[in-house]
Length: 502
Image (cartoon, rainbow, N blue to C red; front, side, top):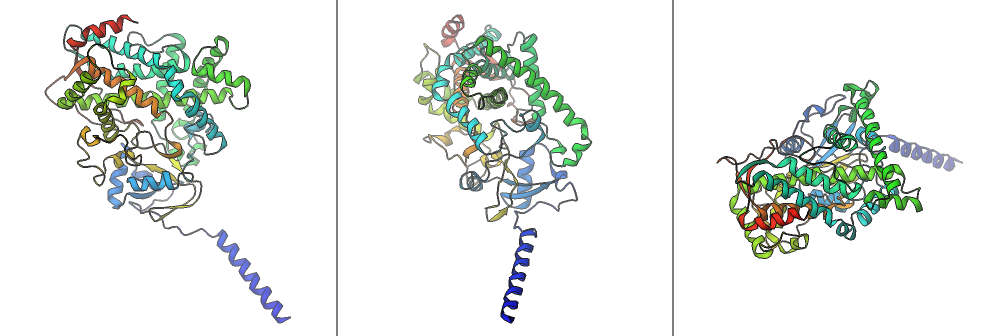
């Protein structure tokens, strides 16, 4: 009897101990923090713009390429070395394949159901398959080649018109934005929405204005994402603003879908609607609108910003510009324009683009990831639900990886057809890498090659173009690029013939 009592008591104590261990908060060995966390706000007071540079500064204060922050109720971990990026997005890729939920994605992103904002799971996998294997497949991109060629023609025509009488000052940003925006929108909707002469009227004007507002709102974070109790009073009116805006945007996107349902155009929207007929539960109107939104976000500003940085670097380094032009003249010739098939035979042009991606990534901070379970990174515990910031800008300038990391030197990529993705991250890495990689490379390569081949470029003054970074998710130049431009005499007839083809 005594033995039974002893065993029963021991089992009771064991049960109580196990329950206590399961309920007690686990003690984590977290990455270092740059300062003591304040009550309620945590480290929110440390967050300053530009965020990628300031996070790099905090990393240096910690003396570690991995550190942690407490931003209100959210735990955040920041990594800024290639080895740690590989550990997060290769070794622990599935764990970090989810996204943190923020207000912008809730109201504008169809309640976290777009391919960029959805949590990892069946819904996201379906969206990813649709976009990567169908809408942006090599075969479909080849089918839309005429759009990219035609938009190049519009770009060259506008520059020729502005500089046909000799060197003239041009501002490149609006021209590059027009080019990239119309490439994406014509693929989706089959018509141009933006021109230099007239920015559209009626439906087209409202659509363009609304998309520009999307970019502005998306670039602004809000304390309500980190301090949810502020949503009760709608601190700053942010929630009210995006709710009203999301209804306006949804109405325009729905109108676009409805037009294609009637007209049955040969576009991405038309293709999705044809799939909707056989699988209505998968290809809902909401899914289609979310895909439209994602493609516009991912495919327009990123490419135009990269092109503007590339041209800024080239006019500051005329010897690089001349070397790229000689490559084009020798490998493409002077009797025709560069085409996409030429890109594989232009290694120096590709090196210029890679070096631009390295110095000025369109997403200096990758879209945040979130851990779905506890894991270990860099020897530190990362609790479930932790937001992960990958500082691609810092990785690209890591002196342990790159010689003279702040110097523009395309020659560093000579003989390197591929760079390890955890060292160069213009399109992200792992399951959440951008599915538009091939389209982005083609768009930037064709545009930059055409500008170098067809025009002469000089700075407006003897001083170098400033390379100061502006604020925004895609890290635009602080000041729009103004350059002197004129058609190359040896290419003038080719340019004219190209313009007349339109």
